[in-house]
Length: 259
Image (cartoon, rainbow, N blue to C red; front, side, top):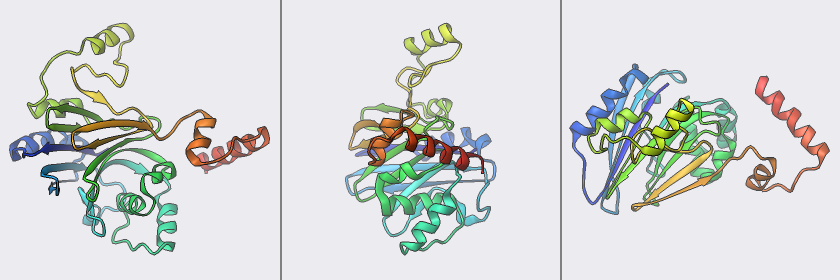
């Protein structure tokens, strides 16, 4: 379990104390290491990433985050684990990619560089991450298909925030401490708040299996994964499967899940 936080300030900046408060609030999620980076884009906005690390894969300092992809200038903060990162790393090495670390985080950066957003369909694991695309000057927030790892965001004017926890967003003192009526009704009805709503007004969760794109103040959300086989087939560029193909794919998926 790690903690991630970030803020995009269009045409301005944020205080170091704000970032420090947010990072401290995530300390329990990542006691082994922490780091921040300030990214100055070519479009006049300032992007700040913060990360608190629980070291699981590659315990060395080479796994430190926020992590940059030197060939592209892209940055990532990542919470989770990619179970098939060694297989992906092998494919990327065959394509000529060189690696410094043994971390799955570096593999994700390289995968985005080589395959673009299509790399999301190759990931097997639990994850929530933010990736700053330096060339396009845009931010991607991505959550795993089952929503195992949390990821929340808030936008106010020219400021966009994201974090692993709602209380971290509150710690910035940018998010008003107001109860969301829909979130409260959901909690009173079901004992929990149904996503994408939260109990705090204006704070939303990135839906499972979705990628949120923040581009110059504009937000868009799209589904990259679906449980429905026909949607999966379209996402992968496959024709609809016959019953025999479906049974074979199910057996392969079950075998992959347990071996």
